[in-house]
Every structure is written in structure tokens, then in C-alpha cells.
Length: 136
Image (cartoon, rainbow, N blue to C red; front, side, top):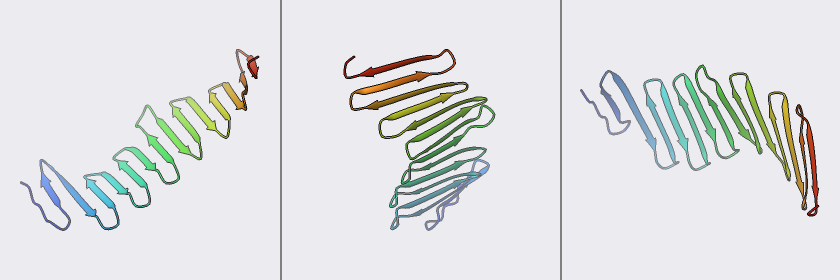
């Protein structure tokens, strides 16, 4: 059985209820399907999604990306040129500044600094350091 109402667009069938609400003037699209919610606001460049037990949240105006996946947890936080990713006990953090890329994985840290043709690379825990300046 399928029931549709034009203003709100509610579909009932196959053992679940889908609700689709759209507001076009303000560029807002909200969809709710059982426990899944997908909300998009394109005027202010924001895309927020929540999907059941797994959560996927994206905010593109301020550049935030958060993902959480069930047991094998994958969490990403993206904002201000910083990415943090956690998978189980494994954490990978990246920070990208003006010319600096810092990456941390567990006990190992990799730092790259690139500035006007010179860059430095540092790797701890199995340590090596490399410095490169002006073609040297």
C-alpha cells in the first residue's frame, strides 16, 4: 500500500514509512526514512546526514566531515585543514597549515614542512630525518 500526500509526500509501503519533505525556496531538502534522516541546505552550503546507527555528518560551509561506522569505528573530523581519522585503536591525524603537513599514526609521527623550496621530513619511532633545501 502506498499513500502519497503532495505537500509532505509521505509514502507508506513494504513495512516501513518514508517521509519526504522539501522546501525549495530556501534550498532545504529534508528526507526521513524510518530512522534515517537526510537534511540538505544548499543556500548556506550545508549538508547534514544522519543515517540510523551509522552517522555521517557533513557541513561544507565550515568544512566539517564526521563519520562514525558501527563496530569497526571510522571517525573522521575535517575542519580548518585538519583531518582526524580513527579506526579501532588506529588513529591518523593530519594537519595541513600554510606549508606544513603533520601526520600522526599511532606511535609514529610524520611531519613535512614545505616552505619556499625547502622542506623537512621527520619520522619518529624508526627515526629518520630528511632536510631538503633549494635542490640540495
